Length: 71
Image 1 (cartoon, rainbow, N blue to C red):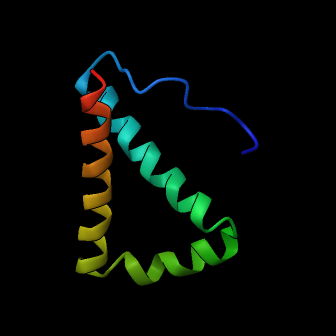
Image 2: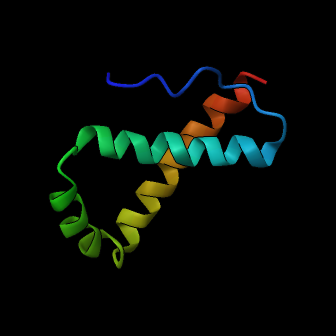
């Protein structure tokens, strides 16, 4: 891990918690696929796929549950 960016899961508002959940989800994808060229190439494939978008929403929801448990 190059940088420590997540120092707490505690947020001031539910909105901040949801935004943190999105950040966690996006960083998870970036951590899993560090090659930005490949990442951007694949984006067009999942951007118009309902199943892939639903799966992405599920990941955000799971991360939001995690954040909400810490409040």
